[in-house]
Every structure is written in structure tokens, then in C-alpha cells.
Image 1 (tube, rainbow, N blue to C red):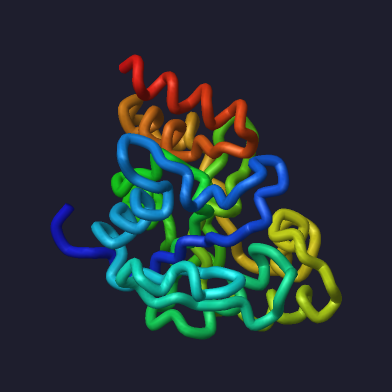
Image 2 (cartoon, helix red, strand yellow; image 1 turned 180 degrees about the vertical axis):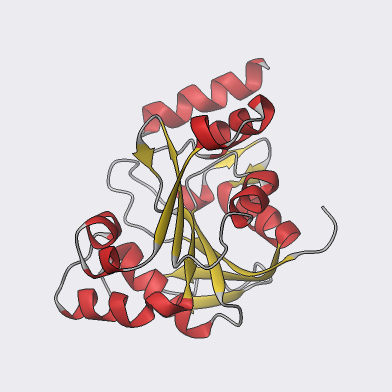
Length: 209
């Protein structure tokens, strides 16, 4: 991939995974956990990598700095808030740990749209992905405002809360990425799993390829 991007890569782990029934970070595919797969991709492309978690005891042996939530029980917003305070780069790429096919090329391509935006988000088929996106450190006080008001949804914050005031860019992959190969890479990279049935189906598809 050449020189790493001047950004902080943050892997969000440790969600409650109510629908899956177990911690998605430790699901295994092709001999690796989702945690390990995603960290390898982030380390290949980002100059700095963090693991954002509710409690850091489960994640300290993977070779990357763990950032426990400063405000407990408030989901991805709390992870974003804590990681932004410790990031050494202006831009942070944040991604959930339930994306089995996270791709370094997609991360690099999306970085090319940063310019001077505060938030850069991809969308596929009209669905915006807030947890496969870039955030600038300028958003920190806005996130703090929403957390204090107990507004915990990143989607709502970006499109109706404090973050809506910021300079954001939504990249419609089908329209703005002209290379069909790159479109397919994005579409695959943005696939996530939420239920045991989705996971089993995905594992079977991988096995039959």
C-alpha cells in the first residue's frame, strides 16, 4: 500500500451485540477473529491505530492502544468521544468491528475526499454508513454537547443534532466512484453482520468460494 495515511484508525469493539448474542469481535472467519482481521487492515493503512472499547481488559494483548469509554453505557458516540481526545492526527477513520471484509483500498479512497470536511461518510443504495467514516477532531465539542444532553445516536447527531451544523460530505458510492471494481470493493467492505443467521450465511458463502 506504500506510505500510511496520516490519520488515526479506530476499531470500535465491545458493543452489547444483543441480536448476535455474543461479542462480534471474536467471531471467526477463515481462521481469524473479526477483531484480528480489522486490526490488520487498519494497521496496513493508518499511521496510528486504537481499539475503542467499553472495558480494555479483553483487548490489551493485541498490540494496539486500547481506549476505554470515558462515559459508560453510551454506545459508539462515547467511543468516538474518547478516541478523538487521544488521537494524534486531525482525521480519524472509525469503523465497527462487525465488518468482515473491511478493505484498505476503500479506506484510502475515502480519505481522498477529506479535503477540509469535518465528517466524510460513504453511502450505498441510499444507506449512509456512520461507522465506516472519517471524523475531524473539530467535532469533539459538538459530540460532548450531545452526550451531555443524552443524545446518543451518531446518525441523529449528524443529520439532526449538533453534528448537523458541521461541514459534512456524503459520498454516494454508485455515483461518485466511477471505477466498477472500486464500487464493488466498497459495497463488500460495508457489509456488516448483526444476527447468528446472517453470520452463518456469510461463513457458508466464504467456504464455497
